[in-house]
Length: 373
Image (cartoon, rainbow, N blue to C red; front, side, top):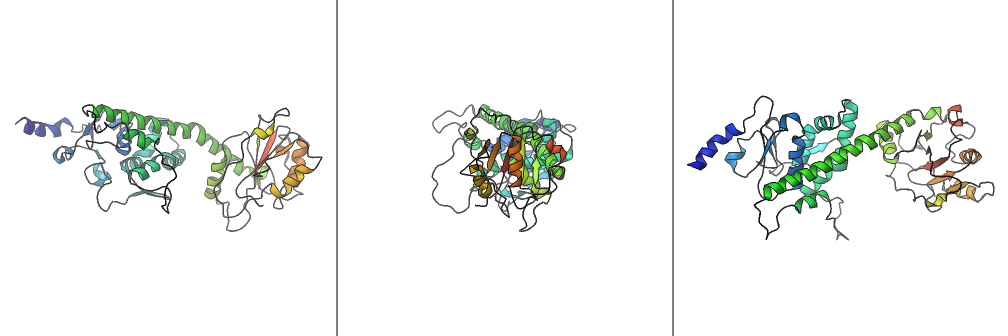
């Protein structure tokens, strides 16, 4: 009798009022990273903020809930059903991402832009879209892949090691062990929501406060590059920032790569206050590995290694193993270096006055991509 009464009252208990959702349903039992994050992300939005998370596998309970994630065997965004376990489900994020979505990916796909705006306060649609793709690429996609058993690398073969400290693994460890009491599993699930949510917010904060401003700096420098050098091959950054990945992304977006022609962007120039005459510039880490390019970049190896041997080249440091970057301590070394850099940079084309005023700073010249050896 009591069970029948509870079933009768359930629809009224969780009935939505106005635009407020009173409950989010997910499955009971062992929990995973994807539904913990999916629930957390939904509760970041005003209409879901006060929603109770109901964990059950009872079809009668689930069918009355206004929102379901990771349970129910249905994907229908119009009805707020976000499950990915059913046969025939092959939904992906799109826009170049082809990993099958988990419940976290489904919720992010439909609500991600609103969540980004709600958390960061950003209203510019272009910025939101850039962050939307970046957060999926750098955070959500891995959770989708892990939950759906998608390997990072095709080809198989024995693994030399396994990763057990990723977010999905840490959420798994929050579940009760086989020989532990599971009476506190709801509290454990709430801890899983808090864990995934804190890392999601940290990721979004990092991209918003550091990654996005760096992208804007690099984009401005690329668009202004012909004011630096008439060839358009040299990019001058007003200040150092993490520029490498942005440069490759923006090259594609601005369509600067054309078939097998030499790339438009060959060198990046930026001030580096850490390189001072008394410092040992060789303490800098070796150049990173960059994404593959359709064509090779002009390296500093062939001419610069010989240039460094020249007795007049005092004050120049070249990374001898990688040949990807060099530091200059004096203005005249920069001028000599530029004249010997690459056949793709016209030797008779002088730097503009804009740059001439800036070479009094300490600059590091850095080429990127695959190096001509």
